[in-house]
Image (cartoon, rainbow, N blue to C red; front, side, top):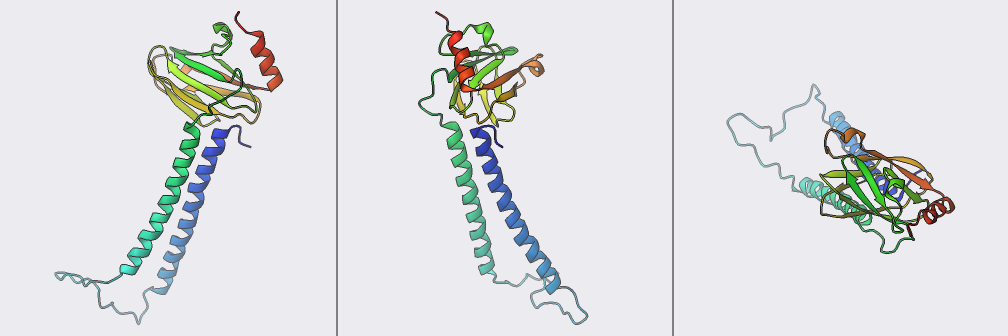
Length: 218
């Protein structure tokens, strides 16, 4: 079962590419086998009239119909893939305008750790390398960097975005199930890059909001 909305989107897109590839492969290999059998060499076979002869220009075969059919089918397949790809990308890159209290979180990359800042002003040491979110809610992350280029990604969620100084990139997801998932930096950012990991803790809604309300900075 998919653990997030982003994984559902990418799985659907991967399935679209896979099913079209399988369909095209079946058609192509079926025709290949058919033509191999039909036009195999026999004792009574003779060279066709338009066989290329060394030193002479080949005669026009006049297969315009085949070209039109091939180009038309290829265009249809490419249009389907383009529409599917842009639809998935648009959904992933368009965060919801309204999210629950405590579900809009600032993510700041440092060498070599992640800092998560919540709307209630949660103490920084409570959120270093640990991102807590509630299950069944839209989560919006505003990602930036305090020093060099990083890349914020959640393994298993199929979500990544650059963390760049002076710029904020926004991503979102909808967790479907509770559990812990690995946050990883996917941009070589220095000697400690390999250790720059964090944990996404997807909690039940009562547990999350109990924690969130208990960490308010007055």
